[in-house]
Length: 496
Ligand SMILES: *Cc1c(COP(=O)(O)O)cnc(C)c1O
Image 1 (cartoon, rainbow, N blue to C red):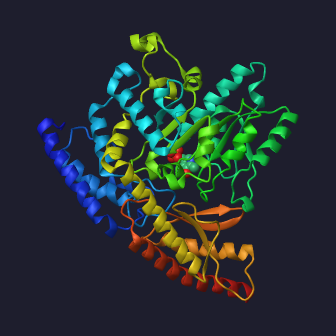
Image 2: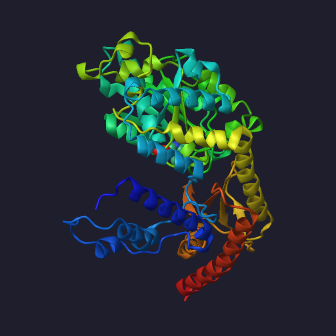
């Protein structure tokens, strides 16, 4: 039975009440959902109801059926993947955006949607320390919001391909090649898949802390030239997903000066937010991005206090996007669009319609202020330093790489008479991780670095404080003891 306005008011109050209760009780819930695959299909009817139902019942079913199937990313003991920090301001922004229900593909669709995005992207660019070339007010470069870093990356690759093909119309598409590293997010491989283009994975070394170096780039370009391949885009990362590695943008940029047809896209989906803090912009990373990047992406929906989705993409030259993506059929033509006096964001990304995402970023930035935003980023890093100090002091754990910002990659490495071989350590850590993943009170994820099985702890939930870090460490110690026992037994059994 469809809600009328007054019924919506009541249902809305109730929804907000319940969301508040959810946040009050969040830390008493298990972090990870414990349901079995298919649990919901069993609980729900096979078809949509023939006659409309009472909204109270529907809302109650959300509590009863959906909440148990949620893994609580806002839980203060959620340390898996990367955070998707979320604030009430952001939620309210989304609520208002939903109420306007605007697809915003043209300026004329709703001038506020485009204009707020253009302003908020400039605010954000300034906050992060990007140079004015990337501001929308430059009239040349500019910023646009995308759904995800994967979309931002794909958009950059599409535009890069378009530019390259325009410059070299006689080179066949089969000869084009995308550069990524073994640490690049899978968005690079995905772009290759979508576009049907070859992806070359560049090597990174442990002694460089898994960062891509300029000399590697130069060497592969030379090799590829020789075999008739044409790199046209390089996806570099600031803050890789596995270990938070930071590619040497300065060196890569310097090499690419000699190859101006190669687009440099910098993916800083997670770590880019730290540029809000002046002390976290070095050594020279931001400077190098400002100097060399053709495009730069970071996600407000990861470490930027804005609920999913809010990926921000800046380009040095907006024409590179619109040349690749501008399609204007008659029914989308408008006076201002024809005159070129307004931004039509539909030409800056792959889809047509778009969500009014800038609203929530605007709410969050105004409510927190730049200083509140920085305080949050710094707090996460301090908590991570605290965790890393526990690891360093422990005889049983070891860091696999240096802690990066709010991410620690470590493993169980007990002191033994003979140092354990890689295989043995990996076996032990798999047992350890198996135990950790059975815990309901904390959530961490694993990764592999050069064949080393390791565990990641990433901090970012708004409500995480010292007590949760301490608790996480206590859980790790407890499970480590059990894992070592279990591992010894399997070894003993193998010997018997
Ligand atoms: C998380 C992450 C991505 C993917 O982000 P989406 O917005 O989910 O596409 C890409 N790159 C890096 C470095 C990431 O950490």
